Image (cartoon, rainbow, N blue to C red; front, top):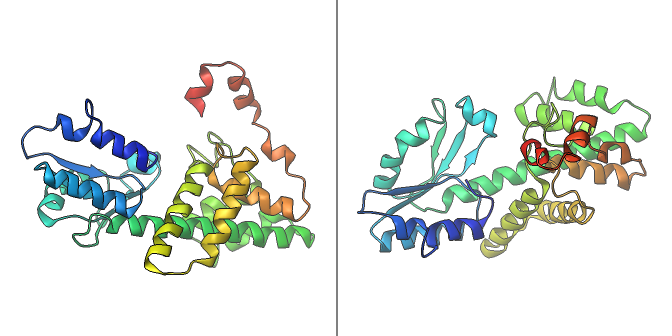
Length: 266
């Protein structure tokens, strides 16, 4: 996986090190698990085919620890022969039922991934707004979320992100956050979703709100934090001081001061 479309195109098309230049014979199948624009996958699929190679778009839903436990879900698009060749690799990283096929369009899986990431971002925003309402009404935000995500919202997204938002834990490396997902990548994904929506004429007013929320958080220098940190902006809009949540935890502060060790923790 790579972080964006530009890097993926470089990995494929670089004249000296790219997949297309290094490929031998026609047995190679490129399985792309990155979250990129559907048109990027379609363009790369055409390039692979023109060079006698095969391409499968298979964006993944899972953090690194989830992949290690074979809990990944793949959204797969590509020609049947290429997908069949890719199945052993995909199956090695997910449990039964973790592969979802969406036809021969190489960009179809990317549409699904962008839709899913939009829904996660929407859940983060809704948790933050609901907890802001509770907190400003004099209730304990953590207690409110504990009730909600153990009853009517008892699912992975609301448990994980709900607790991060409730406790304002947004630094990668913290126990609640783990490796996290960078906020600036969330901005990238919502922006891609809006671009696809414009092309197919599907209004997404909530996505427009989310883009501005992510953009504002990035402008405040929070792009390196977990994308649940957009919840801090919701609190700030309600007049709540979140400065303590912006500070690095003591252990990470010490490592950040140590230079080289910072890269290992981030």
